[in-house]
Image (cartoon, rainbow, N blue to C red; front, side, top):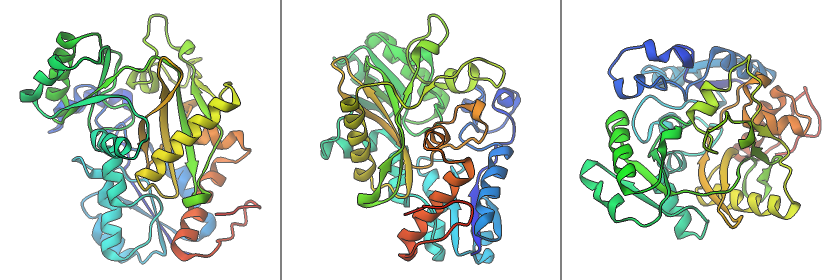
Length: 361
């Protein structure tokens, strides 16, 4: 089997991004321009795991990607590429693969575009009865007045089509219209895209790793974010600071509790909501769903990430590998299971993997 591997490589460490210059200044000024992309160590670890299937052709998702994919003649493309720019950037690689007739892992272009745009995803969930927080979309500065008329404060703001907590900081919690308008104005200027305002949910936050398709899609062990591990005075939320500033390799900052120590009934309820969000958007093969409880303990979907991060170093506290490790899977086995699941969907047959036993799609 000849397998292609699509990715975007981060040009510098996250901490160094503030020194960069370029056209994307609104993001570069905050050190998060390339935070969605992967470090070389992650790219190498995934390639090593894929090598069990046969030759691996690395295909960085740059401007020459379409021609390189066409010429690679691969049997399957393992897609981890986040894309370069725009609200549909995560859909670019799978769309190119579909145009060229190359099967690939993960969700299709429509799902990736919907999931990245938080407002569009929430529209679909609400239409299908999947619980998610009340919200408003501020398309531009001309629409800021909707925040003055809204009555669901306190609220939390975020850029409409970013991932990896890009643009999500402690400053995004707002208590009323004046503060919301001021912060939304800053985000509109910094990121050049719409801003989502969500009614703030007061309860615990969880993340659910899902692997599989259709009725076979299953949740890995539930993860609860340990807000008690945040620095004193920090608001209970998982944002850019928690993921990329406070959580350094030399810091004692393990914010993930896996499996989540919550009642079994609540675990089932959270997993059911996560699976509903997964299926409603049409996710395939794997995804990670973020869920938060309201003040009454009811789970609401925050967002779905159909291209979940899988940093190999345990000290990085990457969610999907942590949940997989709870099941006794190695990092390599996690990556290989994604391929097995995708191949069964594409080809309708099981794909044997010599490095571990008992795999099913």
